[in-house]
Image 1: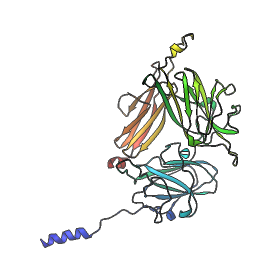
Image 2: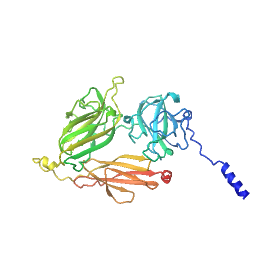
Image 3: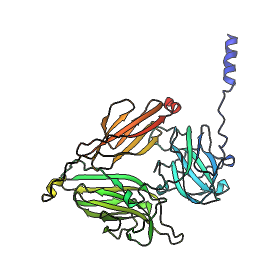
Image 4: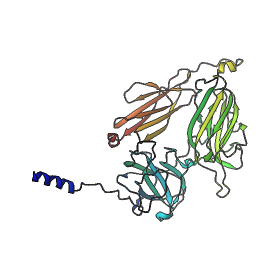
Length: 414
């Protein structure tokens, strides 16, 4: 009996092994990263703590911060983010040599993106050659109920910000959505897409957009699904402006929307079946001489009295030839969320009104919405194929493909 008691006491007083915090847990021990871009490192913040004097204020940061230092070799837009992680992260970029006097470089929604926007995990800013930047990575402690995981493995990436694919008028991004079912005599249309004009340029022959000297324009093409008032917005905080035009060429555009204020939204009367060219651009800053550049959420909405029938609205128009062209499919977004583990993909087609069919791994193609979420997937590699089906029933024969990996360690914890 005495022997048993001795064993119990021994088990109580012998402390268990505990993991050491990361080497860059403290600000003064920040890991130095090389200046050449891109930079990509895989790290962990498990058992990391906040500074004794307190971390710099970052909304909902959980207090498991780790630190990095990076010095810009060149001047230009750079993106710093931790979009890939086993938990939801928070990223903050600062200038300054002392913890108590750091200055946040980017912090608003308009600074986020382009890979995982509006999540606090990635920021874009104009880096200055020779300037040293301090990067803090922490867990996101925000929740409505159960506390989310705020520690784990993450990949920190620093890269030169890619120019927008819709910089030129000829490469305008097709914007499409569909009218929803009627409700109390009205049909509702709403579509939204993420965009940015970092590193965008102004083309020779581009129209003189309203508002004053400008630049850094990106372009969208939208075919109105019905006749009525259309509201277009790029968000109040983006500081960007919108120009709406009709016409097929850059040198032959008619301005429809002018005098747009700094709220980033305005309305105009749209005609069913008409195609509109929409420019999002920045006004020149008086001190720097450079146009405003930010990210934004581009939205178009409409309310129409009845569900539109284009055939009824253009009785005198000749019947169009049958549509035999196949749509092209694009996977426009991929997000890894922390609680629960979920992969979210959004799809688009070059033909407005298209529907989509999805195929995960060896499963058959099934109808899916323009945004698809996969939760609690098995650890390992997965392949998602998506094909668009246009309004005439034509199917994309070359589905868009994205391959991704669900971390085994993170999946096992869930």
